[in-house]
Image (cartoon, rainbow, N blue to C red; front, top):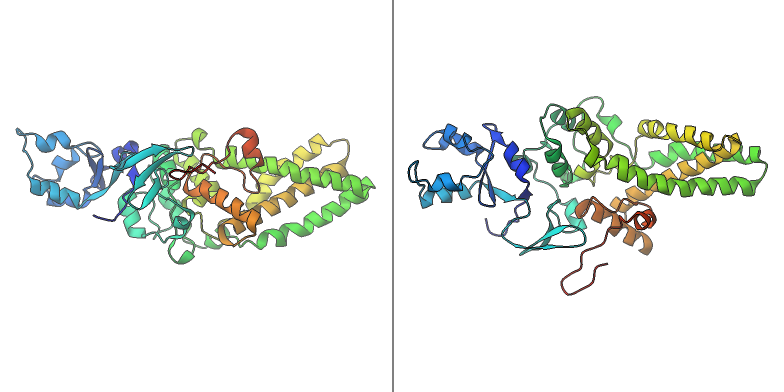
Length: 375
């Protein structure tokens, strides 16, 4: 189909589509979804199912079985949905980010299927996406689909890191019932709920310490500590990919925690942390602050309040990076963060700054344009 950029599909994903409900085959590097053709195959669908998830190059040319005509290959092209791995018939180069496939329309990052930030906001064709990838149907509640699926961890991670965009900028159904509103949080909820207790705690800490300068020092220390916590949580909790259990419990929890954000990164109601989840994640840090600063309860409160204030700044920054035009410094930060989504999800974990990425060697570097230098 001229002019259409087809996605890349991992070998594991192809092999997993090996039933009558979802049947993929390969011919060289090309992937075909022949599910709808099973009932029309002259020799019967069972002959195709014997090669479901496998390559059919040899059997199509087998004179003893039945050497297929040119017409058969033409019919097969109607079911062409993509290419195996990064081996599409285009020029492929390795960059500082990852493999980039050069197409007539420009470079495509093979792990995400995208080439630029603007691609994150292009409406996904729900039906075609499900037909092509056999992952989650965006027309139906997502959570139970995932829970009832038998996806491997490898296939799940490949799919959630290939971003989609729900039509009209709305939120895809997650629960599909009365719990649906609880899964959405508007950005202004974060400062509305947490700034008052932070202000109160800061005043209590300052009064107990008896020195505004000491209270300010502990508070600022808490803010600085948050930037490290932000990086560590994003890298080792939200992106726990390599250590994720290969079962539906692990995949579902990962999807709720951060997977859905990479799957639907422009969903404005699932960008900031719901208050209940924040309480769960913040409770250990309350205990930690009081363990470290056991010598002074008010110092612990001041540090903790500084950390929560840092979190508020992080959540608002995260939202604005996705959905607002920003001053020059933040434009660079926006470009950096959105590259984490459409180009390289294995680097670029800092959201409010690149500092800890530079310290720990995970700074995301833009691949150089032809004849240019990387940024």
